Image: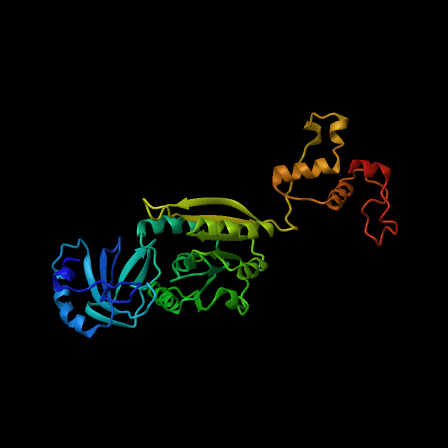
Length: 363
């Protein structure tokens, strides 16, 4: 700011769309201790001459930065939106990227790379996600909304294959570069909208990782994701309200929240990352239960549980819903008396609608 003031360089006014200096971006890596500085301005040639940016570079190089200065770049942006984008990028010193290491992997990061700014926090976040994902040997994983492919590459060494889908093409290209950098040959990254891309995917995933943007997942895309019917999903969210909305739809369609953890990536702010493990309870899921009736201290009345009592017990103890038909089938299998015609298949019971009075009372 002192430099700009001395040079009388006007700051950009985003409402009037006037001025020269728009942003100053600094990316500093934690583990590799590398630094990248980017000055974002408009394309005012007169102001650029006045700014004498090479003189600014020398002043930056002379600073005690406690990190290796890898590059200083000048980004020209004449767009009306108040976002950092490049109409032209000029390298004033060094290179336009830095390297960072996370969980034993190396990542090439540019100014525009979507990469966690808190590297130590990111290691906690991704370690928790990897813990929730669990066993991945010989499994095919979809990493949807994959960004620069950080999660995909963390999982790839212990998976059969990982397919990442990301709408930002620059992020996909960065993911491919990083996968090559880490000698990972079982990663595939696809540029495109998840809503459209998953219709064309030939592979069927064994599990899915979701790391959507702040607004969460398009409901139509989420339905397609649910239709894959995977046993497990791990959802990483940076906005709790979006997560709550998407979880409602997931739970309505058979997914259960097994566990969740909040990871504070941005201390002293109201922002938090949340990792959620979801499990699908399919209709054909079974639980083997061994009961020793000789050890049960129950009266004959207690042993004659009604169907509703059985359903309530199974739901409470195991979180599963069972039908009257299923209960009657199990009773027959165990040699327990059931009404004469109750819930027999139609091929065996032409009077399948008939229910004995005893069974009717049991329900």
